[in-house]
Image 1 (tube, rainbow, N blue to C red):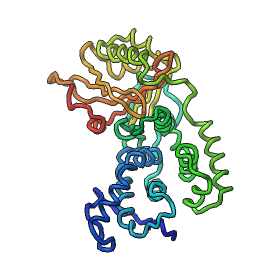
Image 2: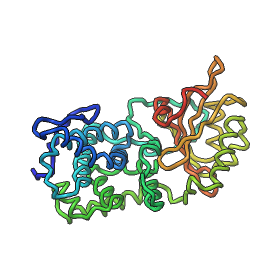
Image 3: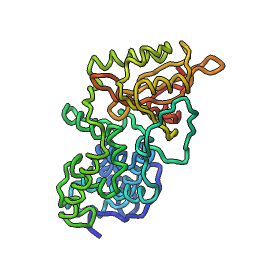
Length: 346
């Protein structure tokens, strides 16, 4: 085992301890470790999220990474940077988790779209669906605008969903080489394989991503004023139950999916029929609260209960192009609302 590695066994932990094992010496060593390692926590969380497709699993694996690193810090010899060492631990932990838990799909990755929006939809809660991630958790913490844009592109929901179609080691190679810009030799050392094998895996991963990856629509940046104006109109159309206005905001080939329901739909007219059939909103029945997920605009949608209070209904993550709303992922998991800082009622 290399001197700068740690055992691969999983050790659950809720937090990184503030006082280390006796082998490390004193609490000063612990403070030194935390001071040096903590600045990498956000980017490690983004890496684990890309690997796993679950922000909850990613948070658990980052905690596990820091616990493993803390326990083995006295054996860290500095042959690689601390950042590289932490990434090695996190990546190996993610590989173990993928072996145990499998991949997290979106409905559009499982079959053909439905053309019957009026037909009742049936949830599949047993499927471990892909989860969105709040920008406040995975966004780049950098002053460099180019770094922020690159981080946003690498956490886009469609990109993370496409990664789920890759075998785990191809996923690792693609992320380490194309996103984190590791050298092939570094990836080979982590995976215990050859540079040639890494290059071959990267080529296969790129080809698969070209086939299953995000659509090539040119997304408009969330900060663009035109996006803000479109989003305001979109929220108002839902809140006013203005179906005509809503139809005008979708691209003709727009996609709508809504885990845990496996059905998904394409086409502006079909999506609007779905909203009418499955939601049948009246003016004032729905409220939209802005949020941000995966570098994309999002809304917490609230629906009025019998007591007149608007409560969480689902979380929408949108892809916006110059031609309108291209994709909506509506997550019917209200436990996500606190993670996005969304209120209990609106």
